[in-house]
Image 1: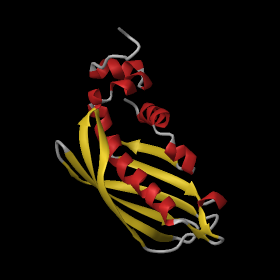
Image 2: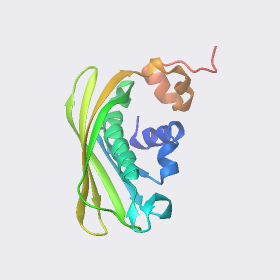
Image 3: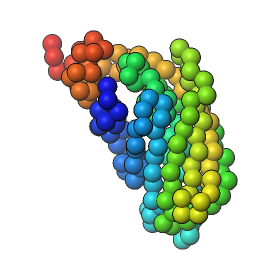
Length: 163
């Protein structure tokens, strides 16, 4: 599956990233980046981004790094745990970019690390690490219809609307 097909399929499945204002770029399996411009809706104080916004962004960075690696193999992932270190405050208008790396890939678990940089101030604002459980896409047959037909055929997946 092409990176663009993966990104399109993911956007249909996960609406939270869109709600938060995160913009996903897929550079290849295991290589993604997220961008976010901090707006009024992200603030907890007049001049400070809420830590939950950074935590949600970090979970997305870590999880999509893992998912982009295993999805072409017909697998999904879910967060088992993740941690974040907040290194600097983030203010209104900051342009954030998060990227991740795979540290360990097993049959059932994957560990990823991530960084969020504030490009407005040229600094690292958060680091994180996550562990993800891997499982077959077949466990979520209701998602099959959201995938391109060519990908369903490639993986031998059935469509929910097909008898």
